[in-house]
Amino acid sequence: MSGAPLFGKVVVFGVGLIGGSFALALKAARRAGEVVGFGRTLGSLNQALQLGIVDRAGFNIGQEVSNADLVLIATPVGRTAEIMARVAPCLGAQTVVTDAGSTKEDVVAAARLHFGKRIGQFVPAHPIAGAENSGALAARVELYRHKQVVLTPLAENSQESIARVRAAWEACGAVIRELTASEHDRIFAAVSHLPHLLSFALVHELARRENRELLFDFAASGFRDFTRIAASHPEMWRDICLANRLALLDELDCYRAQLDELRAALQAGDGARLEEIFDVARTARRAWGESRAKG
Amino acid sequence: MSGAPLFGKVVVFGVGLIGGSFALALKAARRAGEVVGFGRTLGSLNQALQLGIVDRAGFNIGQEVSNADLVLIATPVGRTAEIMARVAPCLGAQTVVTDAGSTKEDVVAAARLHFGKRIGQFVPAHPIAGAENSGALAARVELYRHKQVVLTPLAENSQESIARVRAAWEACGAVIRELTASEHDRIFAAVSHLPHLLSFALVHELARRENRELLFDFAASGFRDFTRIAASHPEMWRDICLANRLALLDELDCYRAQLDELRAALQAGDGARLEEIFDVARTARRAWGESRAKG
Image 1 (spheres, rainbow over the protein chains, first blue to last red):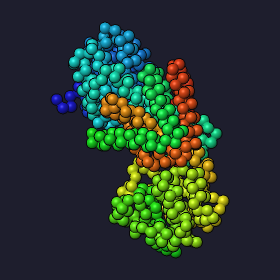
Image 2: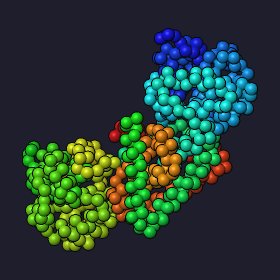
Image 3: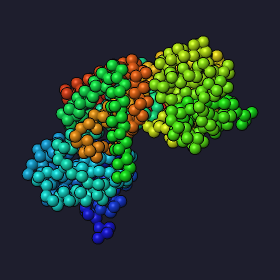
């Protein structure tokens, strides 16, 4: 069986970092017969062709999707619903659709709306891999290796559909996890969406000051790491924040309460309380880092 | 002149990451005849001896300092005043004292109190280099190479004293900058002390939740970088926060206002405003990263 493609035809919407790396990895694992890409611009499609990410650029969605085995929607979250609306009427009986969105409850709601009775053919997924760079040039075959991909399967999904999506991501080298969409969104509001918001906030705050050049001139490695994610894609993060608005507002409010607590300790000169907070944080962060190193 | 020591005898208080790396670099550059170390515990002193960081462990401060050419105080900020009180009465006429504290106004105030008429012999400094690890084992000869060291000279410092401290840090490979103590503290509240506080706050907030293991399990590279500085030394950061309390409170309040603004945009579903903030942040962060890469 080695070398036999698992998916005769794969259609990827969005040939940037996420979709492009998925296509490269499936092709490298010889699990895709043909990869057809759709992109927002001719420029990105041409780039994906030149980089060998896709075999062919698609133009007619209905024609390409109807005989596809696997469809990945890897456009920015804000455009997912539009793609679903165009894909849903054209699905073949054998076609399984998945996505790569960073939020899941909104994606599932849109999928139910657009796929209707065919909702069982859509298996929601979120690969936990990214970079501050985006676009086809940033795609790389190793992106998903040893990274987690969270599936949030629906009651309507057949075991076979779930297994096919799982197999595709496993072929990319990923480790598969399962959560409900709601669990997923609350967890990622806390460990991903909030940190991005906080990092954007710090750089924006400093960037609008008159003495910003002096400030940035003295920023060092702590600032560099803390703000790396502030170089992330603004449109993508706008969409994520809006899609996961309620969970993110909850997390932001918990964090603001935490800052209030720290501010009170600082105001009062309460060194013991500050040290206690810092110590709990350091212990947890070190344990996390060590578990990662082992994992 | 090559190979001739610039400082016949160097005394270092605190033989951990900062003091230890300074000693290693001066010795590697053959700019120190003898390095004598004082430490808080026998264990750390023994470690420093075994690692070749110091030539000798000191026990009698008066005896060691009176004929020293250069004294570095590299203890946690909270212990600096105590060391100054013990060093000041014993200074030789040729002895220049410097420090490595992350805050400068409090250090200068303590120095004025303890050095009195000999204040001209104290040249305040802050090497902009660190790591989340501390202790003698973390010390390394390259720590200061191409890093900035900020001097905040006093009106009472002779040009010669300033030049000697400058030469010592340059021998470690550092790039020297000058600021007033007040400028220094306001700048570092913004680009260093606040980010540390924010990073500690996020990890502490998550670490006290019942589902912390699940949360940490899905944390990825964005979280990793954002929270790297939350593994910093709790006692050191308690001291820095208290020493620079007023400037840090100002910065914290600016940041809280920034979060209020982001919260309002999120609450209102104002995607245009969110994207604008993220875009300003990304542009500034990328420009900063690129200027670093060139520098």
